[in-house]
Length: 131
Image (tube, rainbow, N blue to C red):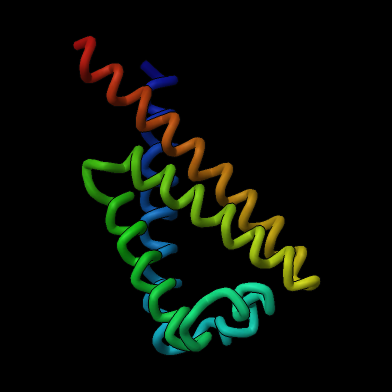
């Protein structure tokens, strides 16, 4: 029973962190209080994206808010995989800037946490189905 309690605690910690974090970052794409988000956009991306960097960051903000909300709903497993994929995409973008390698590593590590949340969510679903 103690192992179940610990996995439940880990699930809640990851769920809250990976749900609230993207919502805060997504909202800040409109206010730029935490960072000047446009500076993290790769020059390669600015060539490919058909909108201004500011507009693109607003779109990114919406996606991040939605991803965070999905993590906090009953679709946690799907949301966790979404956040994981999103963070890996951000890490690739950061690597193509030729700078911000530390942030790319951080985002990959957070993506691993999102993967762990998805796996814990799958285990929870299996326990519910077998009981």
